[in-house]
Image 1 (cartoon, rainbow, N blue to C red):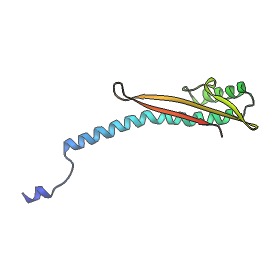
Image 2: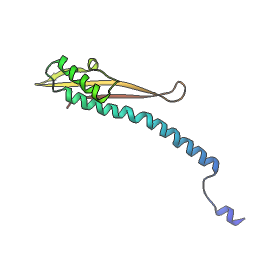
Image 3: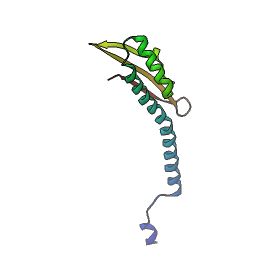
Image 4: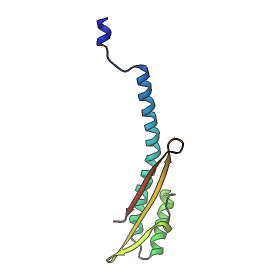
Length: 115
């Protein structure tokens, strides 16, 4: 009797719940990771595009980089191109929705600008 009181640990039911929660978290992370990787590719392409001197040239450079890096979320026409002093500044903003369960979605808002 005394031996059972000293034993501690996780029951099978508790282990099952922890396993399901870890699996669900893994599935969500597997869906979030590609959106973040795409954001990094967009940021790199925007930095390249800022080398252009006209709006059309900036968008063209971005579209070429987007084709190479397989960027599908945003296109050159979605960029905001401006000038700060003598340099071209390119900014962007977009939203990605990841469906969770039923009507629930995880909304990822990405924004950035060139260096």
